[in-house]
Length: 131
Image (cartoon, rainbow, N blue to C red; front, side):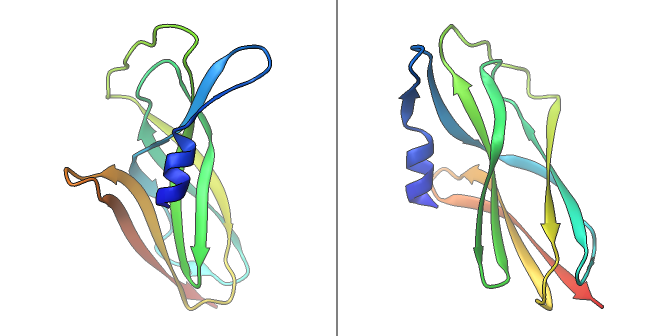
């Protein structure tokens, strides 16, 4: 996760000369079922604050190990002008579909930023699977 985070914040540019970079944004809220049904696909919705008018949703960073899933929201930041900070009152929603496999439960770790010591913080939710 740390390696990916440093890659995501590196500056990039395309052939048109537009400078942009990718940035993880902390997930504030999650809508996820209380339980999953094996073999079904469920939609999981996360909400986050868009830091500036230069930020746009780009996708999810998604890592899986055994029954654990780590999910981060990724924004692309186009810095071709002066960006205006946005008031942190309107949450932006983004969703992804999750196929429920053969695990007895799934543990989701939603990235919520870093604490004062620079350590990653997660909202951790375990969801049981029923037949």
